[in-house]
Image (cartoon, rainbow, N blue to C red; front, side, top):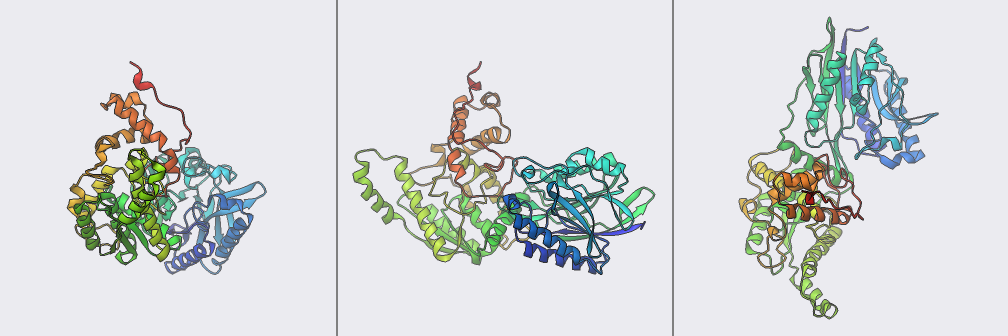
Length: 557
């Protein structure tokens, strides 16, 4: 048995389904591992298929091609000293497996299958895979090493079994998406396993956006005693090489680089721009377009788009009507100039008025109501989609979680778009991040330092400007109140009675509950957006559209 191991972690950004592209990433990482004189190279969970391919796994040809790609990367280890820990889909007589193969000198020398298959609001692996039995360790360079796969380490018996059967080091490939506090959760989990089993655990995570999920990387290792032995970059690709030495106290890391995690303020911003960037580029777009209203939400989305794609790839349009204030016209132009983006003004006055004139015989003597307001929003959506079609730019929509929760958005209007960076961000968090961005330049962005969002936009009362002197608070409680109630309903699944006990007015809570339920049909038709919390609308919170339940607990004395 060797007493030294150099271990390389490939924290990469694979694209789901892109077997050729991911294989090329794998070959490059293998070459880098050879150059670094690494003994072991590990990839993240289901690296070659990307995580997670969902019903692509029902296509036999896709699985065949994925296994062929795994064999091709295996063959590339011939003539090298690198032992390749390659997570991949595999097929045996019992069905499909979420597997890891050990590839050495051009051939597969061991296979291990994931035992604990997640079946929650993000991943449904039991839909595709057969679970493995409690696995035995593998031997690499004479060292007994356990390879629990992602969810396996959430179950103490998996790691305990590996260590009881001789594993002296645990390598864990993961596909773990980001949401609030997730990085702390991972550390606590790994620390628990290390304390229980008294062996180091190396945790490798992938990075990148995949539809509504963002994988944040931040791979790390913890040794017995709780020492953080290494840590990779957050929200960026990384190739992490560390040396491990066998001591009287077991394996220890001699030279692990620890990159600090991004702050809790920066993390959601980085998640949004990474999710946006990858969604745009991985789907074949190069540019985006959005409506810049002079309000906080569109200003923040425009800033995120510039940070993600560069100002030359962001096109903003102001779409004024008779109710658009001079302040909004001024602020939108100011924001566009600060960001350095293309900015055009397209009036919707004549089209809206023509539509109202043509509809007058149909509407008859009915009084004006939300119908006329929604025509304005839908005309803006039509214009933005026309620009999107003409220039091949992806349209971004800008509604925040507070608005989407209560249906304060116009379907087929301001909800038009291919992606929404703010979908899982409550209104007050939008304001906090706007202030934070004006004072900070996040890492790995293409935007500029400084006050890119005009203070006037942050200070003004939010308004859809669909009627004279309108503000959001005409229809909704103040946003600090609304956000707190929504966090109770959505994040905590509280009852009306429990929210009233926190000090909120009964009628307000009941009204918000009703709005939350009846807006479900809108949310089902909304654009995807970055998941920032455990209870993202749609991806983390699944409620029926047709729903007759109403909570009566607030009426109980």
